[in-house]
Amino acid sequence: MGVCQADGTRAADFRYVSWEIREGAHKIPGLPCLFDEDETAETLVIFLEDAASSLKLELYYVVFADRDVIARSARITNGGKEAVRLEKMMSACLELPNGSWEAIHFHGRHAMERRLERLPLMHGTMEVGSRRGTSSHQHNPGVILCSPDATEEHGGCYGLSLIYSGSFSMEIEMDQMDSVRAVCGINPEFFEYRLEPGEAFDTPQLMMTYSGSGLGRMSANFHSIIRHNLCRGKYKFARRPVLINNWEATYFDFNEEKILSIARQASELGIEMLVLDDGWFGSRDSDNAGLGDWFVNTDKLKGGLTDLVTGINGLGMKFGIWIEPEMVNEDSRLYREHPDWALTIPGRKPCRSRNQLVLDMSRSEVRDYVFDSIAAVLKSANVEYVKWDMNRSICDVYSAVLPKERQGEVYHRYVLGIYDLMERFTSSFPNILFEGCSGGGGRFDPAILYYSPQIWGSDDTDGIERLEIQYGTSFFYPISAVGSHVSAIPNHQTGRRTPLATRGVVAMAGSFGYEMDLNLLTEDEKEAVKAQVEDYKKYYDLIHNGDYYRLTSPQGDSGFTAWQFVSGDKTRTLLNLVITHVRANAPDLWFKLRGLDPEKRYRLEENGRIYSGSALMNAGISIPMIMGDYPAVQMVLTEV
Ligand code: GLA
Image (tube, rainbow, N blue to C red; front, side, top):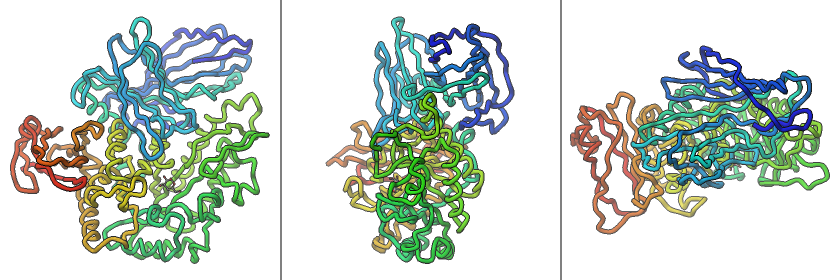
């Protein structure tokens, strides 16, 4: 913590006062946090005080014993008579026993998010974080500290994951005594918060788990707590519809007939929902204009949304829509009417990204406008899904309505504003499935999953690139949280050609859909898509509700990536394999399965062969090298 007292001193000496254990999970005002679904959680509160200033500190430890997770947050209250300035207020400081640890973190960039990097600790401080106002493509708000020998199945690992969508910092320090400390929370850079007498400030919550049996167990703990105690709403466990999104099929160039023709073809193949992406509103014919003007572009959709949705519903399909509520183009009616609603710094040229500015979401009148205008669209037709996008990071951090001594609060107030808006939308439209997005996976964080149970994984839809992105994502996030689509070849991001079957296998490790003009497929390909959709529906329960195992890493040089889903009762498993490097005269691929019952006997559906769980897990199974570019295999084994 860093606090500047009213007299300018920067001292605070918090001493223990008392403790208390409360039933249930502590709720943090205005911030998403874990809730107590099964009424089994308890909260330990430790009270401290800085006697000289009367600042009071409460440390909350919410214990989910059954899920092996503790969530920590803090609240500071100004009990004194004068205002103080918080300069740093982190969520948790975890002191680890002496010993050697390695750090794993997930870095990336647009269209290549959450790449795993593993490093030994150094004396001094390592930091991952974001100063972009969003959790960012560049670093995910989670780190793992593990023993140097930790693997998927062995070794100790502490996983830390912050429930926050703004600028964050995760510092890992090894001191002169080789003690290790992880300090996680809101990034102190560009952060200041003025606390008036009687006011309190709450930090976001940090989820912490420990596994003594490797990274796989650690991930399973996160998957379970996120699915049960963070995701909410109708679609928390309900099957999500298989969707077709028109973005890579049309970009901005569409009209009602084009969208309907994509939907018609999709419905014939068993796809259940059409998502109309960017370009349906205002004067949005390119990314230069229109953001902020949330009314239907009737040049493109002549009969408005109602006709289009009626047409789509008539095909037996649901309809979903894309929005980007936090943004404005200068070429828009909204900006012309309210230029001061955008975050810009007086007297300086605004910094544009994708030709757009960011709306000041710390202001309630801005949020009201956004809510009212978008809610009117959602009410005007039978909209059953919303993709909430956010296509730039934030700079020009200055709010036209805050006094100068409060400008350091803008980044955090922005995030609180977003949570307020998301809460309004999700509670007003409880039947809508929300999907988060931020230029793909630029705001793929646990907090967003409190409002939307899935997030578009990445703008990179290439099946091979997605292996690495989805592998990295799986360390903290459940499969059900990852939006993943089959797209056209050559792939629009890489130009690579991969078989349709492989794209399907990769996209099935997520919330599944398509992102292409299915009318352009051959008849054989259409049949293959139909079979893929059926397979996904058949395996849905296993994929979304089963246990997930990473069998190999796409980052190694094995030339293949394998993963596995196992049903909760261990009676069924789905094995997935993508060969990323086919070699001539290669030996068979061998790998050992996980998570099965050693005593059970399993039949391989493909050829009827029977194996014991013990043999599959200890000796493994072999697959002959398949020829061709990037082949994939899916195999199901069921208890006999
Ligand atoms: C972002 C999203 C894409 C698409 C475009 C539309 O990049 O990640 O999926 O919605 O915006 O502009």
